Length: 79
Image (cartoon, rainbow, N blue to C red; front, side, top):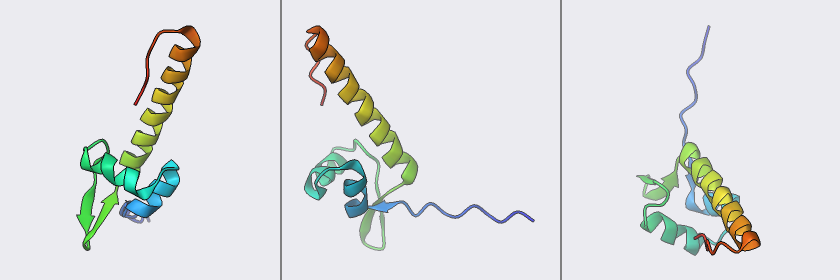
């Protein structure tokens, strides 16, 4: 018998900031600018796992583009 998949309760903003390696206040600015979708649950902002991992992946790509453009003198400055 199959059991239902557990509901993704996501991450708190404190947990998400730690996963992303950034300060909590910086993450809140990112959320305020809608760069990562978030939702309210129990009076707390939360971030779904898929949205957090998507942002982490996009951030890694931007860092690599910045590194490559600086290496080749193309002028891309990233975030």
